[in-house]
Length: 424
Image (cartoon, rainbow, N blue to C red; front, side):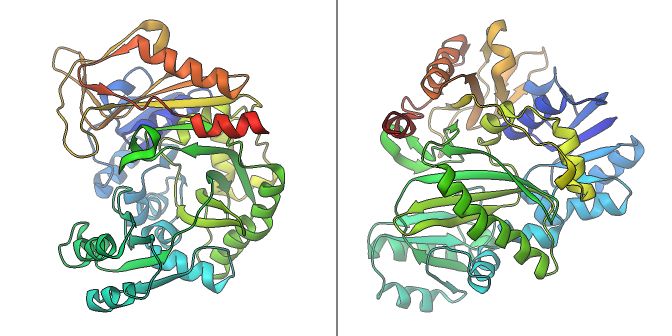
């Protein structure tokens, strides 16, 4: 089979590496991919949001199956377009992708179907939003309605910060049209858990839980990022919590989307907070998380392509989905200065023994074939071991075998999880 994977980051590299293990896969194309994927897929310089040329490439190259991984093309309707062209796809249609594409849509869905989440109000008028803040308890959460590269969520510690966040989104256009409407919601406290899930619109199969680390610096300080590292499984996500999530969140969400006429097929991401009043939804994503995919997929023992096709065909209930009992840790190596300002173009050197465990994100090939840094988050280094402490130690050991100028990474990935792990 010829497979097309839309996207070009570490998440897509993780998907491609796992698909290479699937039976019947002869060729994988990555659109656009990146220079670090050259040994795993043929990269084609077509942007993930260039839907017309993606469709043209898929038809001309007789692609058997497509995986649309990033949020933007999903919300734009890439799956709809490819499906209409006769190319079966993994991923939700545009109507279902609203669950991430509009926070107002997702919050209203949760309210309508009694899915536990933070209390909230929505605004399309800046003045009314500012007036509402005068009566809110702090801290409070301000969210841009639309997609904002994972950066459209501000936790304001006081009224001044909250008003500034609203003005930046609604008046200054910090996130473009995505910030023209905002959600202002209650600040929740507790351990965060990410749960990716396979679903065909009827059946849902949660994957191994994980814990992301969003802040740029150690001790959860600094600006929010796309993610500086992950561990799996998340020790805060106990069997009792998992059972409660299935009953009150996972199945109700799938059933709600079906009832709304937008059955969700693909990977549905649940961002959860385990509060003193039980688990609540912080956010939905309509695709694999990044870097959550880099720890969850290496633990998958079943055939990824078979599972994806079952999600497309509506046969997930008859398909084996099995994960290892091991643990995984992904350490993100970033460019110093990320997520604000950073330099590009430094040569990346990866020792041969580390290459199988490196997922490339912000990387490109020079004209003479050298791998160069080309983004904020450059690489993900993932180690799988029998226990979580061993996996974390091994991931940091990998960082000693990868080198580029201005490299930066957090030194405490998994520290919170280890505390819970030891107390369990």
